[in-house]
Length: 326
Image (cartoon, rainbow, N blue to C red):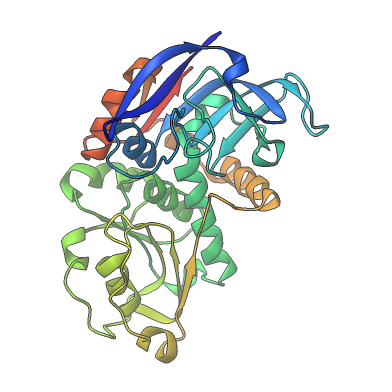
């Protein structure tokens, strides 16, 4: 028997409670894991509060991230005692996730925990940091070099954005960070490596088809008119890695940046990312993230506190990462 956060739905309301459940209730999978840590992401907040249509089938254990220790495995790639990490693959959405003391998962979804990270640090990175790394890798693959000019990161105070700022600065890029709370978040972003802070309001005005060329590259977590503005300001041959829709899923732009400035818009998905690419990204995160990243704001909570923090994160009242000790 072990504790799990169980979500149920009654009269279209999502109810969350910590319950004692039996291992036999776990869904099918190749690998049984003792979960050390999970984390609370914005998507988890939407699922737990019911503010977003994240979960279709109930009951469900939320938690799109987890790190822990293999108890038993039917797959030869993993043995009892191995440390593993999981992000994505619909876990915590349509397969019971990380907010439980045990999880049963497909071996294909797992990645060995890289040397240099423990379970807590892995969850301080989590889906957000992993996605940030994929975005930075997309800019590297597009040939954007530090000497080409400034790189912009939107939604810079969020999980993806803050890791992207850190990684780009570690790689020698000059980083401009866009945030809606410049006064509050500016000092932290500068500590992570941003060379200047820009108020989000500057990117919320309607974009002209083409504006002054400013950015060699960009990581966008916002979408909608912010991404349209970014595209209109890209340098010739610039590239944008887009991974989020915090501002909306529409894109009110034109083909002009693409056909007149040779701009590349690269979508970045972390949910179904292939295993080889996952392993490489996690290894790169270990190499590039400085100790100072792990010294930033991080709140460690117990499982029973997750519903309260889920409400807070959906109301924009959480700074830094929230990790859940199982």
